[in-house]
Length: 299
Ligand code: RIB
Image (cartoon, rainbow, N blue to C red; front, side, top):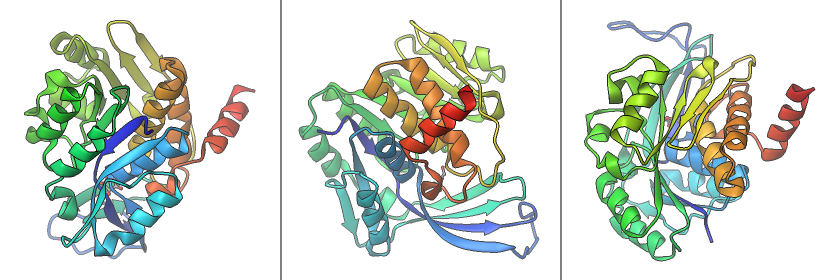
């Protein structure tokens, strides 16, 4: 039985190494190009599975994305409710600069197909003890949130990419907001991390907020907890997927241990390791690697 049901995107990532992000009117030669598996949903499902938590991925790929489905299975994700559609798989174009920072644009493809029947089928097998996770790269998120809540599940929303549609969702039904500073500012109008957390909790007092701050670590706030976790310093090669790695590892460790502080620490370590490797899904570390990393940082 899966502990986390992740309704999320799958993308084929076209990754270009660039001297700087392309400017308006500019044609820029890349210094490297590769295709990687990606999509915030797929990345997060793989991170959950690597962290040792049973996960069912709900979503869709086209024929061109069969290899993504095979990869998810190989990395321990249950894809019973992943649909193979006639619509091509979602695509992402990523620029990676010499500092490892990225700029991304996406085309939704099969991620925007109607998925309600798949969500229904996954929720029909749920016991109510699961977490239902979504991001903002799929269609039908309002129905998905309502379906999950009606089935008694807790809902975690990684509000990425942030836009008006994400903010128009029934956010009072969200149990965990997982956001970065930019997303937090868009959601609350605040720039100070503490004020962002205060504002989210002020508006949604029954929820918890996980606010990731890059090099400055992460804050966790709920009615019961006020925690912070520093970031681990590493040499960044490619930051793509670090947030996804964090989200997956955080929720998986929380489900397994019920310890928020341990979940934050494990997720921070996994995210740090992920930026030392290229790609998104390909850079998600194993739990063994995360434990080894934490052991070296503790001594
Ligand atoms: O979060 C990183 C992901 O965002 C990439 O894998 C890309 O597919 C986009 O969805």
